[in-house]
Image (cartoon, rainbow, N blue to C red; front, side, top):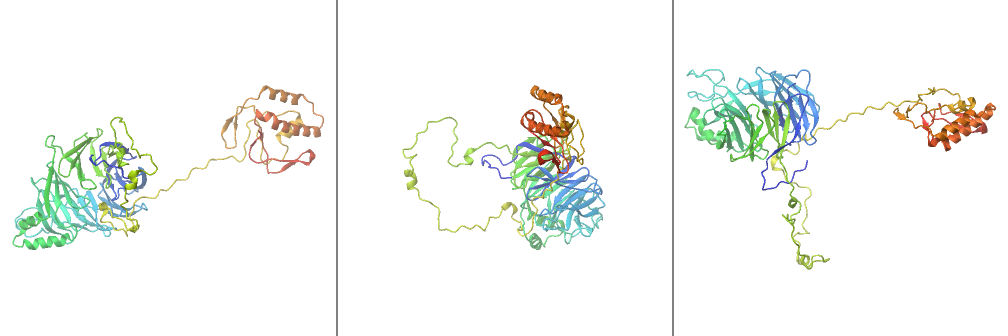
Amino acid sequence: MNAPIIDPLQGDFPEVIEEYLEYSSSMKCISFNRRGTLLAAGCNDGSCVIWDFKTRGIAKVLGDAECSSPITSICWSKYGHQILVSAVDKSLTLWDVMSGKKITRIVLQQTPLQARLHPGSSTPSLCLVCPISCAPMVVDLNTGNTTLLKIYVSETCDGPNPSSHSKCSDGITSFTSSAACFNKCGNLVYVGSSKGEILIIDYKDGEVRAMVPISGGSVVKSILFSRNGQYLLINSNDRTIRIYENILPLKDEVRALNELGENFNDLNGVEKFKAVGSKCLTLLREIQDTINRVQWKAPCFSGDSEWVVGGSASKGEHKIHIWDRAGHLVKILEGPKEALIDLAWHPVYPLVLSVSLNGIIYIWAKDYTENWSAFAPDFIELEENEEYVEREDEFDLIPETEKVKVSDVNEDEEVDILAFEKDATFSDSDMSQDELYFLPASPTRDVPEKQETCSKSPSKMVDCNNTGPSPSEEAGANGNVTNHASTPLQDDAGGRMKRKRKPSEKVLELQAEKVNKPSKSTKSAKSKCKSSVDLDNGIIGENMQTNILGCGNQGMPLHGGQNIIFMRSAMLIN
């Protein structure tokens, strides 16, 4: 798929439904690989369908008899070799994409609403799981061990509470979180709590390093980072989408947090965490529909982090709102009368995919208009015809204007054909890794057509192993000719039914003369047979088709010592 030519004066966001994807089972959630060449969809029957997004065809289906519950989330590994699937039956399944085999399957105590693989490893062994009624946990896929994140911070206790369901000395019960995600490098976990706070946790030691209060204190429904790791999106239960800017460096974030903690040693407990949190995230914009006050479904960033998209959670509405990063509403896309359950923005192109309640994936694309000036910089579009006056030297072999021109290209400069510019979208790519872009297509063999060994006439069946006289010789010996055109349909060499033409009057007269001629002897009959074959080649062959059935590639002796070779397959004498 070549990148389309984009008019810089138009917004780089989708506008119309270009196509839709449908599968035998209802699809519930979708996820792109980091290059956007493959699309994974979790289905209601527990299978995972992988679409080749460039051909819009199914490349592979992952599933077995053990996985039959509806899928709740899908996550690709960094280089696209594995897919993590969470299901309603409390299971986590890791699949190998290339082979289609199941690597491991773990059953949890709670139903996982969302599961995310560690983003910093090419072969991740850790994943972050957000259960339906429990604190988020880190799961080791190799051993199956789970570690609950200690997310409670008491007003009186210094540090996190040792258990997410225990009580502090003041008797305050801890709370559970509702959403969590890794940062870009996977060093920290950002947790949105049910008390309207963002907690930054070092999952290796389980300590809370910072806290950012959310205005209003509403429950956090979803939390995610942009692809470049510079922005954090929060979807709260108060019908508001909040965009934060990440102030921490993209690398060595843990070290930066430790330094910030040392600067606020004079503070204790929650005050210290809030002071550190103010140096980690800065609120940029709050997005909400002040008129309709709708809840938002599956909001996310675009591939270049310039746009924010969110779906309306109202029943029976398939509306998609698109804002710029500054919070200005630029487009509202209205789809079919089906509720929207999931959204995904293509990592590279301005495409948005939405999943309806009926399990259909709709592809929203930009409505491009023809702009010929993009192909030729000197091309000028005219609104109406204009009279053109040519220059005096315009059609000369060497115009005067070209004689004056001096080339700005340094012909002595060496051209570097080995170095290449790195794509900013995939700046963290390790080019030594074998990233999975496409899945090889496995062609299916065509069913061979059944070909009969011998073609048989409907009027008379002749055995192929018979070495007796041919039908022409029998006709000469008995003084009559067998009419192979007695039936209107006949099988040809390929086994297909073929309609024969009706003999003309001249042919019928010749056949009548042969029948009325008396036979003198067997020798003369064979001679007449040979002459009749020659006659068929000359005259009768123009109007009727005669099948010669022979066997064994053996020649039959006729008078004059000549042999006629009869082939196994049917021959048409024209």
